[in-house]
Length: 161
Image (cartoon, rainbow, N blue to C red):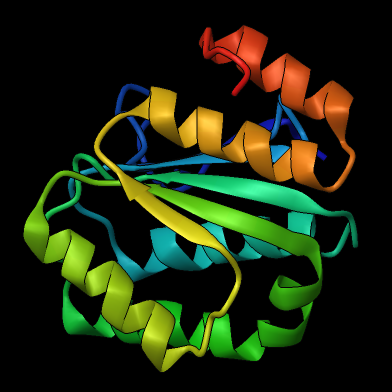
């Protein structure tokens, strides 16, 4: 299973993918969303996210959506559907999600999608990576995954709280 997975199969090799899934710091999964995306790219991302979820291991996801503008309704609906379809596994294995976004519209979209999909796991919305990483490290620390917490604090140069 790849550790860093660019979701861009159909794109030419010189085009940067709008979605990357980076599992090099597992049990931290870092997802970076580009400015825009297609249904094909979303489906590829959801398939990759599903493979990490199928590991049946506790993890935290950082979803970096700083470049995202309001995605089309069909993409929002598909993502909400996927959240509902995987609700039980997400509740069991996801210790929390940190959303990095700066646009108030995207922040509202995150809130609405979580509500529609009945996502009750802990989450935070931040504007930059350091507070998201610090929050993720705290989630790991809370459940006794101290090595993961330390590795994340070191990688992102965030102090222990």
